[in-house]
Length: 366
Length: 126
Image 1: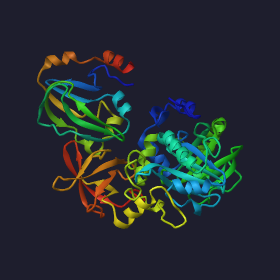
Image 2 (image 1 turned 135 degrees about the vertical axis):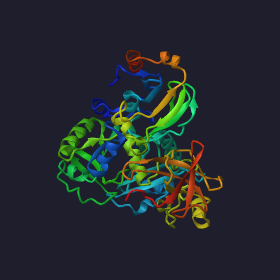
Image 3 (image 1 turned 45 degrees about the vertical axis):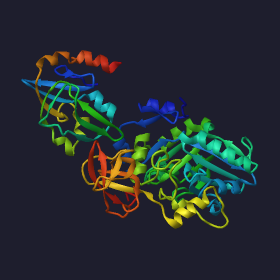
Image 4 (image 1 turned 135 degrees about the horizontal axis):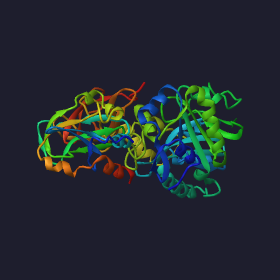
């Protein structure tokens, strides 16, 4: 099992460690609900070093990123970050990712830990078709890069203490290269997976300990705490953010998943599966990812069946939890056409009972 | 880890408090810590006669769903309805307000098969 540059700190704090995507990761410290509330109301720190970082460099960098991702990377200027996905050539999704435009000949792709190997192979095999080579224009820096997500309404205020550059007014999904906590060339972006605001900080492994200590010192007066993967999942689900492997995978299209907004059909951009997705957009799809909340008592879980009033299968739950902020059971799942409007009654099969639920608008938490 | 001496325990991390011909049943302090924040508890077996090891309900933490097993055979006579609105009582007070069901014991002999506090501690240590 792999460790991150922060593992020693998690263990010292008494975190409950679990294996996730081949890494030993903290799932919780004091408890998922308390940690969730820390991020919604204050500031919390996630070790997300398991995420993958892949660089695309050289004069063909933009053309290549345009080819393999669904969003329009040509609108990115220096300092901008974009959410996107890799279509898989069969109308599904290889992974979802963040694209950082470092300069015209350098892009950073940040991918899910569980997909690093698959993504890397996909990127290299497609890169070769355009003359981009592994180790030259394509660089997998995942093992050398440590990453912290500092999230919550007080996150930027706390982190401002660690840099002379103004960061508190940075727009969402932008980044700066900073001298941060005395460390040069820290990639600092106002991104995250919680809907609570804050930043993500990328450093080399050798600087990880310095950054961890500085972040907690700076955040002490704001009640900063470390947060595990358990709360990361409840926070993202309250926002209706997709989790790869749950809500999106190799068989779901971005159009079905409600990710049409990151799938750009513009003349200057050709990309893998463009025709397939365009057809889906124009002609419609037979299922869509929707949010729902339970009316009857019960908690939806991944793979639970969704049925209509007559008991006919109309879909499947992809994610579900008890929402700590809303104190309601919430979930997402693919629903057949006809069951998409808000307030439509659906039924979730929980232990052989059909429990009533209703379709709601995302995000769950506003 | 709190393992009171006056209770009996099962291998499935349930505790049993004998009160005459009845038994009060809940999950142990160890179990609630392992599960994490309890967010839902469902018991729909009140009025049923269940055998030892039968499932009498379900307990859900934020991320996990687990069955609850009868540590002794008996008739389920009461469910702690306070848990419907406050499942977190199991985290806060597993041996007190977090009790889950009351059972009328059918085969008192089975009680001898339950673990005492020292034996249960050994299981937790493993």
